[in-house]
Length: 331
Image (cartoon, rainbow, N blue to C red; front, side, top):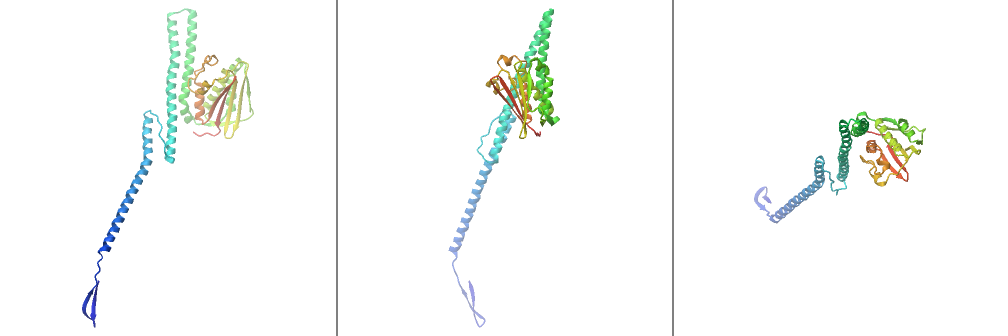
């Protein structure tokens, strides 16, 4: 600092005050450098933290992407889930989807193999009898051969119709949509349609809640197929001169339909796979029936497409199928 020294307004000299600030400057520089280092360290820690968070978020997404690519290639696998946040929920949903797709793919492969076998059998029989018929024109043998050819042709026709029903179900539900359907009307219609079979076995039908008007929103054609298959099976596997009991009731927002027949009990092994395609019983009571093994598989598909549930129960000489359908339904 410099100060002027005056005497009667005349400058007589200058006073200079000097202080050494080197230590203060050095301290300030040290503080500044420390702050810079701390800020740099904070940015580095922040960068590492952001990188870790992003990696933790993107790694499961990357796994999802790779797994989706594998599913597209036909390989189904689950992803290990260590997250409990929204990403974890997404992985759980993916694992559930992967399991369902794997099961569906296995069912379709099994269905294709069984269809090939089931179609091959009547075709081989038709071809064999036609060849024998050509080489052996005897009248008696000709009639027998023609009867067998007609029988096998009808069997193959029924099988193809069932396969077409299976392949069309999803597209038909979307194409034709849904409407309000009376289950009671469908039940009565199918009982009337199968009246000749009922009379042949002298069966007695008991219908509970006959006066109630129960309606459900769904695809009328396939609900009719569903009721027809269940009632036809009950007739087919009932003892002669026995009773078939049908019950229709409402429970919360669902309609519950059950049908119980008196016949040979369904063993546990058969019950566990009864809704799988081409499932037939090994005992004579079931094996000798003219069935393609697709009826209950079609029923299960129809029920699933209507967001419903179907259950099979059997004990002693009674078997019961219970159907639960939501009253409201949206595609």
